Amino acid sequence: MANSREEESFYGKSGWRSQPMLRSLSEVHRTLVVPHPARFYRKLLAFAGPGFLVAVGYMDPGNWATDLAGGSKFNYTLLSVLQSLSLKLGIATGRDLAQACRDHYSKPVSFCLWIICELAIAACDLAEVIGSAIAFNLLFGIPLIWGVCITALDVLVILLLQNKGFRYTEALVIALVGTIGVCFGLEIIFSRPDVVGIAKGFLPSPQILVNPEMLYIAIGILGATVMPHNLYLHSSIVQTRNYELNPRGRREAIKFATIDSTFALMFALFINAAILIVSAATFYRSGHSEVAEIGDAYKLLSPLLGVTGASTLFAIALLASGQNSTLTGTLAGQIVMEGFLNIRLKPWLRRLITRLIAIIPAVIVTAVSGESGTAKLLVLSQVILSLQLSFAVFPLVMFTSDKLKMGEFVNPLWIKMLAWLIAVIIASLNAWLLVQTFRSWLS
Image (cartoon, rainbow, N blue to C red; front, side, top):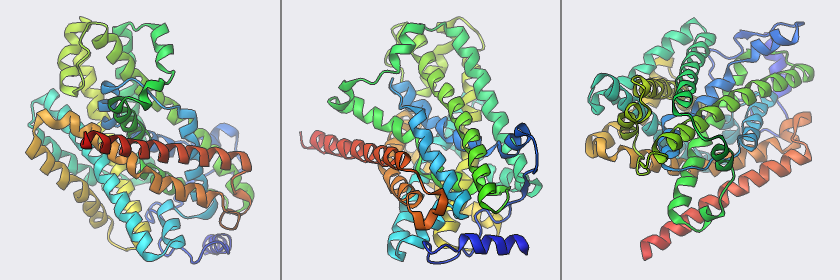
């Protein structure tokens, strides 16, 4: 009860219109103990985990498709700013981004934002589900349509793990992330890439802005990298820690959660860079520049590298990536639905609904397009994500820059300026893509 009273007194700031009636992920809210007093490493371990759940979205199968199709990548140091704002919102206000939007905006606006976010989750899950289905097909010969259906079982996995505690969910995710890292670490060794070429590849090209095809891929990479529902997810799962409900405890929580997310995002950068590096060192160098589909990459890896298990490692990493992403996508769907609609349903029913929202479109699309259309669908899904990104980024930056809502945790001036700059760049790139798309249609 004392804990609840402390929350009421802190979270009832004048900048918010009402108290959140339902705690974000209520079944695991503030369930993980944070030792205090304790040494630095013990505190860091207590807060370690949420960053990797978020990082999963930065290495999902949608990234694989866009990384195979293009060669540019946005700076993860800048992108980590958005995730740090997201975790700060959750810790400082006790609200996830969906709950904050519901409180701040009118019901019609809030409802529209919910629909937009659900579309983003469906687009993201399309990539994740198809990626997993492709991996099942490559490893075990399972037809794509059945592979899509198998991914729906992640609902049962999450229910089982969350009944045991949120740490089990985090442990599974980190284990799968480690699997991806090991697989691609070996692929880099096998492919023997050009170090100078890698360094040059991180420099952005001005040709992206004048070439519609390059811009389409670049926007797809942006959508694959910063997914709208990742911001909602992060603002919620940081609240699973039972940190002290006072300014010192919140400052400490923000510090350690930021370290956790920054380290996890750097690892995600390695994974995405590894996909690009292996693709360039294997396919471009050998003259197979037309490779854009995951299935083609799988078939060519072992013959081109002369290593028998190279293709299998690639498929195992893809399966781990897809399964990881469906787990975190389902959690994000629950957070978004609860936060925007403030509904109270049983955990299994909430997750089943959020899973079906994503699975049904994936089943239809896979059944209609078959294997031949999966690569284009993956890239298209990431472009859709990018177009919806601003609807999450602008509210996040606005809320965390509001003194009334954030109190002493409001963004300092330099972070406000940087965050708004990132938000404007994202919106401008998306607007430019729309202009180029309409031009191509008219011509």
